[in-house]
Length: 227
Length: 252
Ligand SMILES: Nc1ncnc2c1ncn2[C@@H]1O[C@H](COP(=O)(O)OP(=O)(O)O)[C@@H](O)[C@H]1O
Ligand SMILES: [Mg+2]
Image (cartoon, rainbow over all chains, first blue to last red; front, top):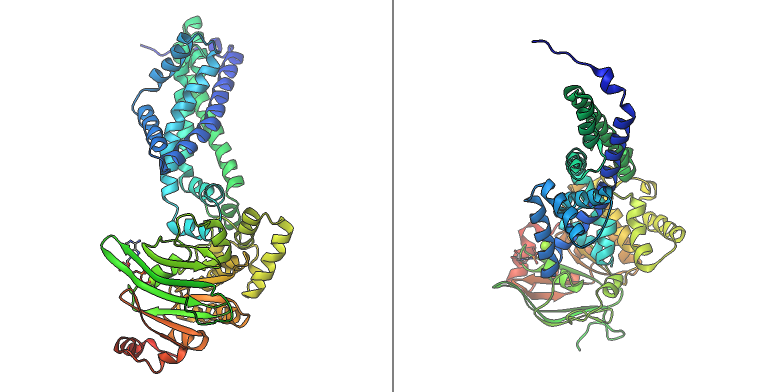
């Protein structure tokens, strides 16, 4: 029994791999930005005194966290189709990934909000800041700072999980790989390359979050405290 | 209305204020008034209701009964304009509560800009001014964690002053500090008093209260047990205050 690897046969398809990787990164980017917004709003919603809003946010978070991503993607895909709405696979994928990561973001952000000492909020109230101003100026950044590692890991996981979007034929990295391996009959080599590309994408994202952290938390930069 | 300074409306007045936490009655008919420019010291044993009384003035606690008027705001009413009230009242807590992610300058300029719509350049001038008042000009661009406890508390006072409040509330602002750092904070408060700021302060520093307060309110079990000029600390009339000042609380 001998292992015979033929990388050149697969590597000559590099433009397709690159296009797939780019699309994966694009999916991850939009879902991260939109999911961060959705999740933060849901986390704020869960903390409001309005029982209806808080309840709705809780149902959303718990439903998503207790169903598989692939099922969520199919629900969005076939749900929109049965309503007669026609969207590209990319749009559907971004929507489904956003809904998914939004729920996890909400849980993480809630932990961040709860970690803000009561005294911070009272000090801000004492200065006559409004509820919204307090969230924006006093709570948001320190809360993000407290959960930044958990948050960024979640977004990297989302990028990796986006491979299931191949199931609705979004042309992301895994879909490209499936296509190339059935074309070349070189499945092992194909998925080795894909695995390497996912590692590179993860590193790219982590580097991006590191840079974003420097921008968001100037105090860390000034005082040299690592996140 | 009974008041101490008939020349003008009191800045703060409490009349028969009631407050319970569950079945625990914390304020049991508390009344006192503070005239413009007056310094009132709230003293008493731990748990006697001093902080609760102070927090009711800025409506951090809702009262169950009685009347509180602060700078014309009916604080006991549910429809009180909280943000207007809190522009007139500055409050400083034991634990400073500076915002850790903002520089001292940003800590100070935030509320004037966000609440009063002050232009940023104007607010920065103001920050310099109030920091000079507490002797911390050189810390303008430092972050709170780079300051000592005493400096953080002085910065917190400056942050409050930047809103140009009509009355300042202090809740044991030196209690979290090492003894050698309390002096610098007390000096700032002394200067404020000399400048005519109206103040209500909860304090355990009896020597300080004696030197600075126009009036002492001694609280005991949720009631104003004894009140009068600072001299009541040296010649108390009730056995409770006698015991309180006698148990080593009066250092000067
Ligand atoms: N938010 C609260 N919930 C329940 N009990 C409280 C609360 N705040 C204060 N208390 C209780 O009320 C009493 C008076 O507290 P406080 O006003 O803080 O006293 P002081 O400042 O004189 O030490 C204490 O027994 C305290 O435990
Ligand atoms: Mg207290």
